[in-house]
Image (cartoon, rainbow, N blue to C red; front, side, top):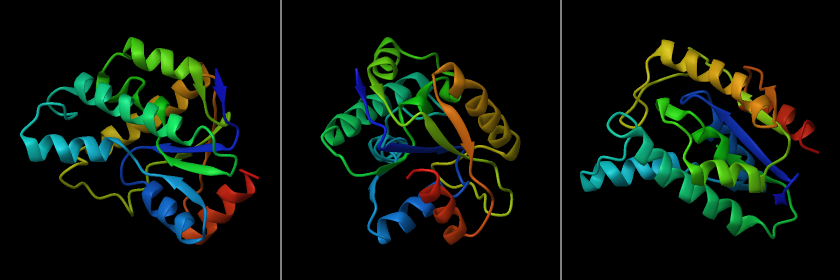
Length: 177
C-alpha cells in the first residue's frame, strides 16, 4: 500500500470552484494534479466515443480510473504537498456506475491524505457546459453521495466554505499543513 499524507484531494460536484482553486494554488507555486474525467470526456466526444457519463458511465469511470492511477503513481515519489483536482474516490459510484475491481483495488492500495476537501454545491457559481451536464438537483445529490461515501472509504470530509478564492485557498492551506 502507498500512503501519501501529502496528497490532498478536492472533490465535489462540477461547478463548485475546485478547478478555479487548483489554478489559484498553482499560480502560488503549489504542486497540483489536473482533473482526469474532463480530459476523458473531451477525448471521447472528439472521437465520437461512448465512454461519457451520459452514455456509458461505467466505461467513463474505467478510463478515468486508469488515468487517476497513473497520475497517483507518477507522483508517488513526491514529498511536497500536492493538490488533486479529484481523486480515485470520485469514481466510486460516479454517475450510478458500480465500482470496478480495478477501482476497488486502487482505492485499497493508494491512499491520499485522510482529510478530503469537499466543495459544496454553490448555485451562484454553478454553470453547466458541454462536459458538465448535471442539473442543480443532481449537483446536490452528488454532494450528498460524496459526503456519505468518503467515510466508508476511510476518508474524513472537510467542507470547504463558500468564499472568495483567496479565502478558500487560506482555508485549504491551513488544513493541509
